[in-house]
Amino acid sequence: MLDDMDRRIVDLLAANARISLKELAARVNLSSPSASERLRRLEDRGVIRAFTVEVEPQTLGYTLQAIVRIRPLPGQLSRVQKLIEEIPQFTECDKVTGDDCFIARLFVRSITEMDEIIDRIGDKAETNTAIVKAQLLKRRLPPL
Amino acid sequence: MLDDMDRRIVDLLAANARISLKELAARVNLSSPSASERLRRLEDRGVIRAFTVEVEPQTLGYTLQAIVRIRPLPGQLSRVQKLIEEIPQFTECDKVTGDDCFIARLFVRSITEMDEIIDRIGDKAETNTAIVKAQLLKRRLPPL
DNA sequence: ATGCGCCGGTCCATATCATCCAGCATAACG
DNA sequence: CGTTATGCTGGATGATATGGACCGGCGCAT
Image (cartoon, rainbow over all chains, first blue to last red; front, side, top):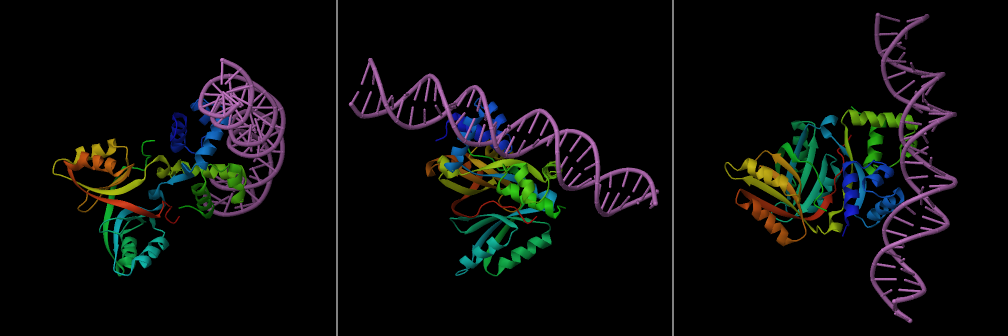
């Protein structure tokens, strides 16, 4: 799937996506045109979907984070789905098998704000909110 | 917290972290030294924690994704925690309030692989696995 | 076995970009 | 009203990216 070179390139970029091509190339022992070409192909193949930024929500006042499991009431599924998309404090949401239909991540600045948001979906779905106490594992890549 | 300029800079970088300073500056109507300085300060302040890459796990053979809720058996908490950290297929894990102690995201290449991994923690914790059917919301930033 | 074409690599020249510095405008403040 | 801190700009300079020419190894058909 990926050869060893590609893996090292992805790893380096995962650690710092703004590294220069020159340095990237040097670290994997390639010339910069080669590294550049490999990078381009990783993007073309869709392996690398995007280069992005990791923001620390705490510094922006989002002191509370919760995982919300959401089970829409009969007939409310698409309305609930739309609502989740529209509330920007939901930053991730997966549609899953099992009793809970959706599992979403919520960032808020206060318990009050959390309550307000949960209330907005409360009449269309059953919810179960688990407040995040610690992030044991911050986003990492599965083995390449 | 962040002024409007900063917000636009973060937004642009969230969309493409490898954009050149020059282009970044142009898009927010600043000179490149100014944009560079603001970027530096966003990093210093810890608002921007890292520049990273979004990988599409599907292209690497990870066709299955699950959200696993994990409730360690009495006395097993730290052992379970260590196990989660050691299994690289777990890419995120939060310690939460409520019945479930941990909520983790798991990437695997097959149901068999999933079963093996769940088995490894099965004797130390109760687990509840929800397979991801669709990603309603891929990672986005909360309102800045 | 030999020649051919493709793939992935290097090196070099040129274009583009980042960074440093000097200088300017503005706002806060004694 | 002068002083200072802050954040900006433009231009010079050094660093980096990019495109082109070229090369070697490998698989394949003749």
